[in-house]
Length: 69
Image (tube, rainbow, N blue to C red):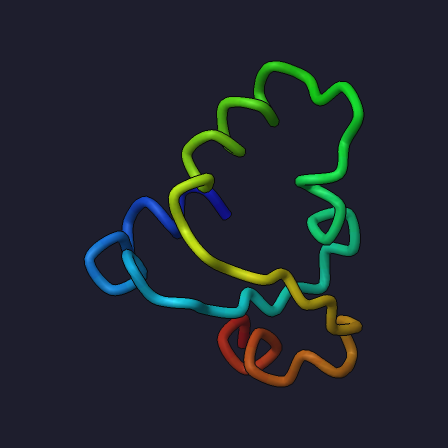
């Protein structure tokens, strides 16, 4: 997620956006009590962006399914 946000910086900076994912733990990224250093570094990269993480079950995530085929 941090890599994608960094690569799309030009399009995402100063805009609100929603991240749709089938990776359930990403919803709780900012709520971790004591994140490891790797998670902490990536969280700091994403701190300057306004986004919301929305969980979608893998079977319902049609867009991702289409891209993997």
